[in-house]
Length: 413
Image (cartoon, rainbow, N blue to C red; front, side, top):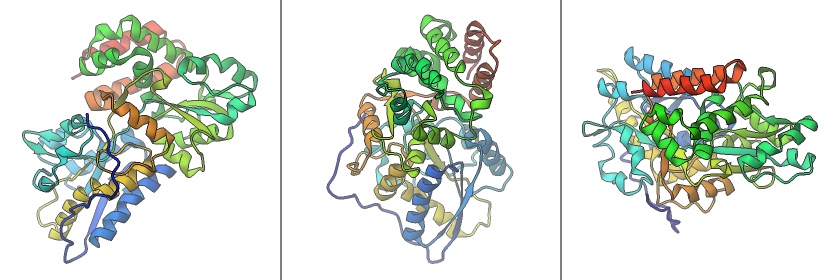
């Protein structure tokens, strides 16, 4: 793990020559919330200004759950986009193995990427048989508890400093008709068990489950605490209290309608767009205020192999975008809006807000492997289905949840 360095002047990015003929490059991604859209616009702006090419934006709804099948189907079906965002992890491994993604090794060879990536483990899923098939462009972590200043002012209590204090405040919140936990419908539930596992279960449990795929660890006492916390959580959420999106849950925090939310650091982008200020309108507690490490993954960009006969200007535009995405200027502009941590160690982060500053401090302790990073898409989907079912059905006992979770992990590849 390398330490971030605050530098007086931005490093100059080597972006390659501008094509003699402008090209249109279609870029697919699933960044559709207000904060996400503002962040991806930063990449598009730098790309167009630096190259003279046109960024053709193709946003797909549904986050990875809904967008990934569309992206994969297009690539397999011979209708690839110029570039696409996907999770840093195993989502694209079959496409890479099938030779459907471009090897970026020569394209970024002169950038010495090993020297500035803050955590080399981020590059591991991008490497295959000596090639480099994707570029991580940020570090995201699900491991955040977001708390509403307004909600706690209403009940006359200080904002909690950790998960245990937060749970203890639920009765007072309910008595004041404040929703203890805000939750967007659908996929936002998927990351919550992993956050509880890291914060409540601890580092060893995360490694045993995500890395070692140990069913015995899931059946052990530390994971049971995680399952019991999930049980507590489902007692204060219901389908009728869920809102359409995670951005809507963030708005509930800002108004004081709801007191807390577990969600990834990309929620910060939406809170910023809505005018929220950390430390004033909301508090952000990494690792639930309990741990010293974050599970981490993030987003990467992949560049599909384009069909024979594609305009060479489009192929060159792919190469230019690859270099731009990890350039100091683009990294700074994108991540300050996105709420994620940059992958570079050599950019000026003096403008980082309070939440990013907390995250950067914990990043010095190393990243824990998230489920996205360590588990196949099939295994992730099985766990997602289980989590959604558990939250929705009180008849599923903690014992049932633990055993089904253990069975999925034992069979994971």
